[in-house]
Length: 107
Image (cartoon, rainbow, N blue to C red):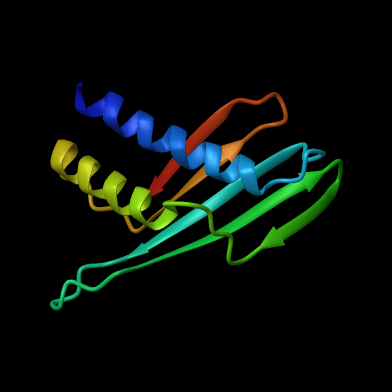
């Protein structure tokens, strides 16, 4: 499998994890994942914040967790760094009201 397809599959797993945390009535959502890394001892942490809308009402969950979330974020970072050399600190997955999905990485 090529590196871009591997990355897409990880993002797809994260997307499904986000969906599992949302109420059925959501109209759009975004989840920010933070990856704090680069320490001499090899330690890291993964944080997240889920924001979603139901019609015009905004809701935020500052500590959303789902199965394998941390592992997937670390794996995505590793794959992207191997493929492009990119060393991002956080990224966002946005789900629009039409169901389309976008990612945005912050370096």
